Image (cartoon, rainbow, N blue to C red; front, side):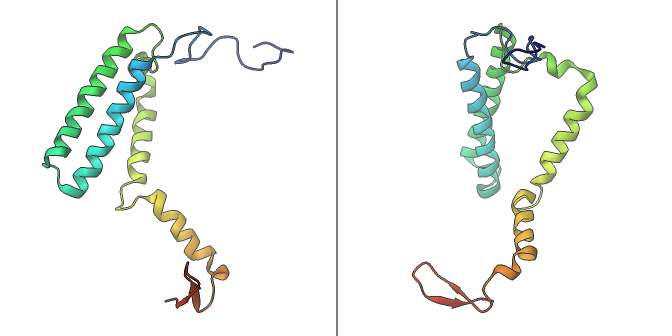
Length: 147
């Protein structure tokens, strides 16, 4: 760490960070990784609405598997990867990886997801004093009775 300099950052880059200041961005990795995750999310979303055997759902999952496989191959061959694959080989972090996976899955386990329901519950409990008593205005200025 450079003491007394303009920057308080460590002089060496951490894991996954480029140690070369002018390293070129990994555009093929960014495109395949982002495309693979978008296809995966779209497949999960479409599968819930149209069924898991729907043609477009299956194509989306196939595209996700193909793009993420290409992403992993690209990351294993570039000199400055976006996601160093050695991070997945570290056995000391398996517990933290599994914990974060369970937390992420648990947040969205309900129909609309906990991230959506908790703020609504908080509004229902804490914001009751701030709501009008009997009527709520609509965008056109009319008032409608509130249940």
